[in-house]
Every structure is written in C-alpha cells, then in structure tokens.
Amino acid sequence: MDPQQGGWPGGLRWRGPPQRVARRGAGLAAVTTKMFEADEIYMRKALALAREAGEAGDVPVGAVVTSGDRVLAGGQNRRQRDGDPTAHAEVEALRQASRIVGNWRVEGVLYVTQEPCPMCSGAIVNARVSRLVYGCPNPKAGAVDTLFSIATDPRLNHRVEIVRGVLADEAASLLRDFFAALRAGDAK
Ligand SMILES: [Zn+2]
Image (tube, rainbow, N blue to C red; front, side, top):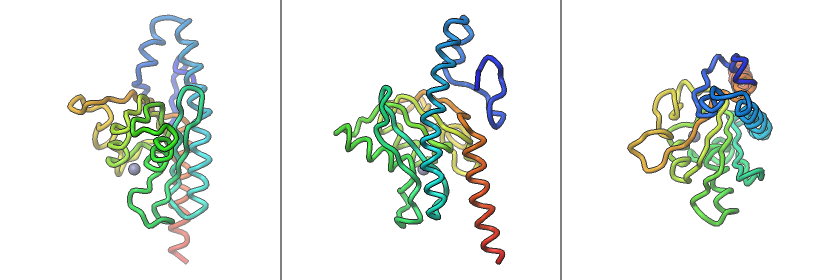
C-alpha cells in the first residue's frame, strides 16, 4: 500500500508520522514506502498467528513484537483455550518478549491484526512499546482510536507512535468469517 497513491485498506486514513515525512520530498517518500513494506511482512506473521487462534476456537487475533529487524515474540488470542480473560494476543506477545529481553521495558514495535482493547493498550504503554502497527479497527473495544486513545494520551508518561490499517481487510475478513461460522454453528 503506497501512501502516495492513497487507497488505504478498509477506508482508513493514514495519520501516522510517516505521511508527514513523505510530504516533504520524493526521496523520503521512498523510505516511507520501504517502511510500510516491512510492516506488511511482520503483519503477515501476526495474521498467521491469528489464523491459528481461529482454528483452535479462539477469536482470531495475532500479534508480533519486533526489535530492529528481529522478531522477538509472537502471540495469539488464547482466552477461550486458557480460560483466561487476559490471554489476548498482545499480552501474550509482550509477556514472551519481556522474558526474552529480560526486562519489563520491551520497547520495539508491536504488530497486531486488530486495534487493541483497553487492557492491551495499557500493556503496550506499560511496556514502553515505541511503535504500534495494527490492522483493522475494533468498533466494540478499540482503545487506540475508536473508543479511547490510551496509547497516545498525553496525560500518560509514554506515548506510542501509531500506524493503522496495515492489511486491515485480511484481518477483518478473518474475524468476519470466524463469527459467521460461529453463528452458522449456533443455528444448527
Ligand atoms: Zn486486548
């Protein structure tokens, strides 16, 4: 998805800092495009984890934490399987990443297929994640843009750079198909 050509997935508007950089000149726009390509690569890994969660009967959401060019950790929603209300993909990924880093301060970039809920947005701030890249919006619980702005609230002591709408259509269709199958199962 090239910001120069418009057309964000899911009709989302790009509001992250890279666009401001891109406006300044063609050379920097190329850097922005490259950054976005990398975002898609890691988002595909998060989507694969989301798919696994869905196949196991959990709402399909997946997350990946990177540091530089390295994938530190991945997580998938396990709420149903673990009977744990905190077992969201982002928390799972941050827990794993902090074990690897050996520090609660994970920093790095978190990729997640759907806009984080209030709990996960709080965890992202608490882990001092520097950049959050998410796929589709979360109309019922989104706490980054939709219902609250936890990750960018200036009253908190850490603010996260946000990139929205990366492979949003794929993330949304995974969720749509999952809930359609659930409803079809219920109807039998
Ligand atoms: Zn969550």
